[in-house]
Image (cartoon, rainbow, N blue to C red; front, top):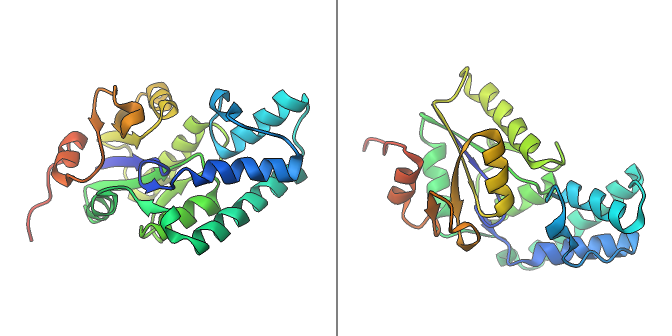
Length: 225
């Protein structure tokens, strides 16, 4: 069995860059800290990782649990309100739904998600974009702050769900430089998606061509019927 693990933002879901603005607003409104583009230089570019590091860098202190929960909950509310008002804020990437549904139906593939976003937001975006997440193996920024740890948590859940001792192949699909770094650290195969990782050895502009994507994944197409 093969493990195919997806990032969310920019890989399965297009969120029109609104989320970064809402994230910065949540930190500003709750903690009175201007994040700006500081998140790009953070060691762990995940929702929890950025928050903790920005507070440490800008105020030279440790974020309290109460503050952490306040920012997370406020951000989740902002994202929920925005998507409910404008559902096209979170749409499936080109070809994403077709590929996802085909892989979920393939008995030789275990599909999983690993995202640095907090859980409620990740689930909301995926659901709004049309993905069926009822039985989806997923790990988020609610599980860990470090991206590799999130990915390993998703991997462990995938092993448990599939019932296998190990996967024949492990492939992660992502759209950012930190996805490249994390998969390299774990020794997993990486497929770059979109313009930001165009120099990846295996690269797809999007998932519009499902056959080409399956070829990139090294998966044999399912038999007809």
